[in-house]
Image (cartoon, rainbow, N blue to C red; front, side):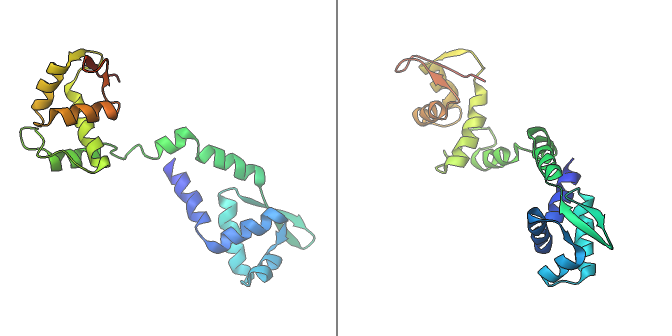
Length: 185
C-alpha cells in the first residue's frame, strides 16, 4: 500500500505535472498544445503525461492525427478516496514504532530503578511520563488518595503534582475532592 501512495506523490511532486493537471482540469489538450502553453518540448510533456497516465490521472483519446489528453476527474476522486482512506493511512504507518518517543522521554527522565529524576516541564514530555506512570494503576480498580500517593511516591516525591497532572490529562479519574481515583482504558 505505501508503495502506491509514494508512487502517487512522486508523480505529483513535479511542478510541470501539477501544471498539466491544472490545465487538463479545465479542458482536454494535445501534447503540442500543452508544450506550447508550458514552454516545454513535446517529448518532455509526453514523458510527464506518461507518468500521470501510469497512476491513472490522465487518459488519451484519438482526435484526427493527435492524441488529446484529459484529466480523469472520477479516477482522481476515487484514487484520493482510496489512497487517503483511514485504513490505507493506518497501514502506511504499520512499521512505525509509535511508542518510540515515549520510551526515549521516559529513559531521559527516569533512573535505573524506574523513579523519576524530575517531572518534565514541557507538556509533550510530561504527557509521555504520565503515560508511563499511569501503568502502575490497574484499569477499573479504585484507589484511595493515600494508595495513589503511595504508588506515586515510588516515582517522585511530589505526589500531589503527579496526581493532579494524571487527573488533568484524564489518564486517571477522581471522585469527590479527594475520594477515590481510578484508571479507565
